[in-house]
Image (tube, helix red, strand yellow):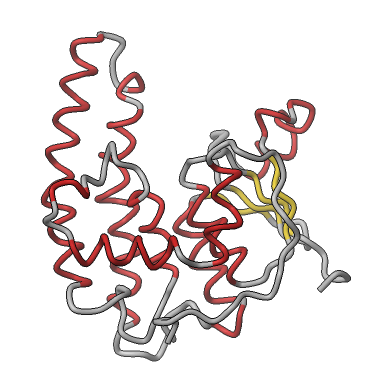
Length: 229
């Protein structure tokens, strides 16, 4: 692994970068994490080539090709690395559902999540911002109901085990502004978050995302966890 070229991983702490970060760790992909806000010299060049709108996460692969959009990156990593351990095979009867949930997280869940955190992107009026945030929070409740039903009775979204869908979902489950565990109406999703939180990959990257450390320890071979398969 030390001789394997690393990918450049553009990420901001505690953003949608988390799900991709977990996958990089779990797939044992060598990477160098770059926070563009702390590296202004590269922000105007390499970062915007990888992500035209200046959003994270983004990757630059060893061959020079670049990717942005968290769902697309998750799909690529899971299909390409770790012996496809974290994907659903293209010929599986569950592949359509796998793609459906990846896109659901991007097209149905994410827009309201963004409105909760950044209503200023839609209006400069503070009263309207509060109304937009409240409306987005209400719209998220039936989304959580749908996701709770989808994974009810099993630890992960798919019975075969942990996939990119679970990693992508984990990001938002971490944010109490969006996911309200205090309501006690989402036991399956809460169990998923607890299981993910117990993984070595989660324990390694979250101090960085919480701002507790400035660097991430070198990759180690991950341990097996109950519910992996």
